[in-house]
Image (cartoon, rainbow, N blue to C red; front, side):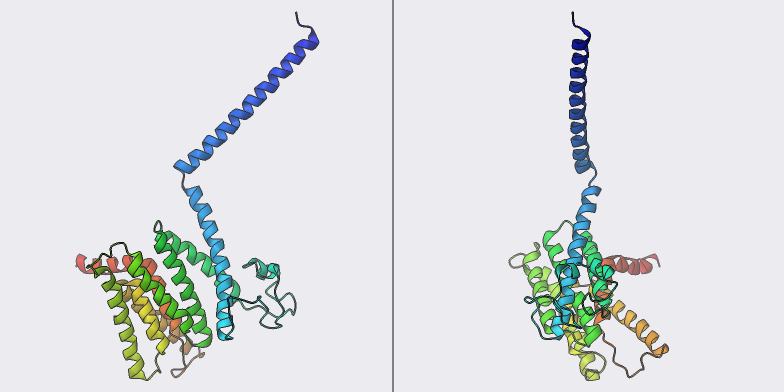
Amino acid sequence: MQGPHQLLATIRILIVIDKLEFLQKMAASAAIFCLAIIIYNKKMISIMLYIIIFVLGLIVGSFLNCVIYRLEKKESFLKGRSYCPKCHHQLNWKDLVPILSFIELGGKCRYCREKISWQYPLVELITGVLFIAVSHLAFPGFLLLVLYLLISSFLIIIFVYDLKYYLIPDEVIFPAIIISFLYQIFGNWKLEIGNLSPILNPLFSALGASLFFLTIFLVSRGKWLGFGDVKLGFLMGLFLSFPNILVALFFSFLTGAIIGLGLILSGKKSLKSEVPFGPFLVTGTFIALFFGEKIINWYFGLFLLK
């Protein structure tokens, strides 16, 4: 027979073994639960993926701010440390964390206490949001995703640069055109030898849009829009194709007219004032990219109902 001490020791061993088995069961259950989430609930993965894409967008947005500033200063944005545009003090890593650094510093430079432009956090935030939006739109096409991310980045630069300096830089527009053209040739799997129809749509859309803007440019002798808008029109057509390019042009002129009228009525601009058209073209491009198909279907649906 077992004594009281031996009996207690046996009970303790059994409790320990039971606890180990319980932990093993809990671990196995947790593993199965995680596997079930991966297999049956892809939303968790999507959320994590979107968070990663958003953070990537914030980082890219910070880089785009650097590109916008250094293009105007004729400086290389591929080398050299970032610095404060006011006091030219080199910035530390803790000064460059997207959005968070701006909040932590209260919108002022850590070294000279001059105000930091709201352009920096806004560009970072908008880039992050746009990266999520275009990723959702392009899924699951990898090459299409790369195209959307790159062209969105170029369009953000064009929007801000033209808004600030009334100029669309060739260093931005030409690479965007080349990338879009290469995608239409090599990224379009429908393109076959002897069958050029998939490339004809974006190509004719690009030529049509650019010729339309070129006509306005020549008639107005550059007073109504700049030649950079002609090149941007070519990019829009190549990127959007027909019929989305029509949606982009319509909303470009619509938003331009609304904002222009508002500026005139508020006394900030006159009829003779120069207003950059690039930001409106970029806005129209994004509207057509995200909602173009729905707008076209709705528009033609009105006539079909009649």
